[in-house]
Image (cartoon, rainbow, N blue to C red; front, side, top):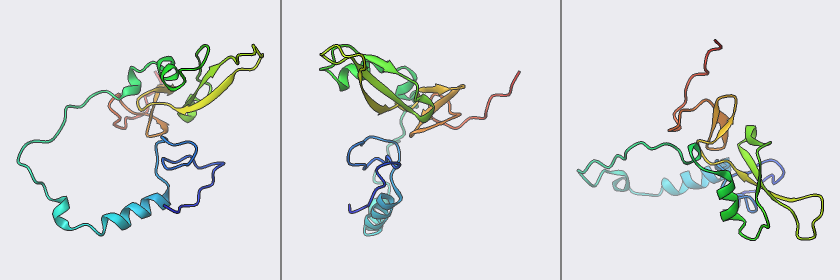
Length: 145
């Protein structure tokens, strides 16, 4: 689409250099609505009598190992270190020392997977840190004891 992005602040799903984030921009939503409005009503009718519902499963971030994500995403890193300083923003960094043994590592930011802990008893769901159960349903803030 021809959406203009504020690259410094908006990290949406269609972002050119940081794809895979949890939200569509308003511009992308407008393009989708325009396309969907061209479809015939029959496209939205239930075509089967079979129950298509699926068993609820815990979100992947509930049990996912961030180091494993780093190893898959960055197979050429010398060593994999995970930095979770950004977890309250539902992001983490994969870091590795540089081959020249420099003091500063190279780090790459990634979105935390849905269901991952983001601190204070909260979980990340669609890029937002909040009170959710392990399935992604909103929950109430726990009362202080």
